[in-house]
Length: 151
Image 1 (cartoon, rainbow, N blue to C red):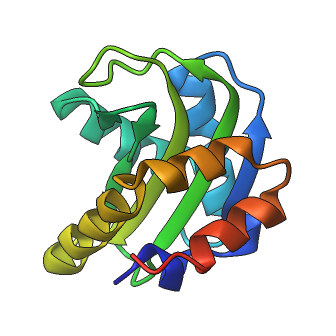
Image 2 (cartoon, rainbow, N blue to C red):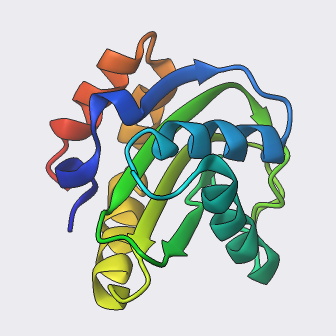
Image 3 (tube, one colour):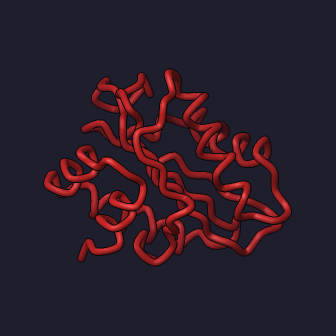
């Protein structure tokens, strides 16, 4: 499944103010919780934090792909968020992160999860797309960039 197929405008946030990894993950989870009926913000945050304990999802170049697996849901939710300023995220290159693409998937959809992560990594490996994303002035503009990406 491609990011373009699962991202919605209401899960796209541009230039969010946040000064810490935890705060931005909370904002991501608050956004996703509005789309998932039987899980709340805390449960979603726990799924992301469990994954972060294994190792940072900061993949470098100012990009992080926090992701969590969820029990009791069949929904796949993506949240795209850019922050006003890069924040410390323990990324692989030790640089701050300002582009966050979060993914929540059902526990049993392991292959779909991996395919979607690969799709996200492919999109953001294009430095031109990352540059466009960083220049966005609105959530609508940000959403449009991703939806019209051919990767």
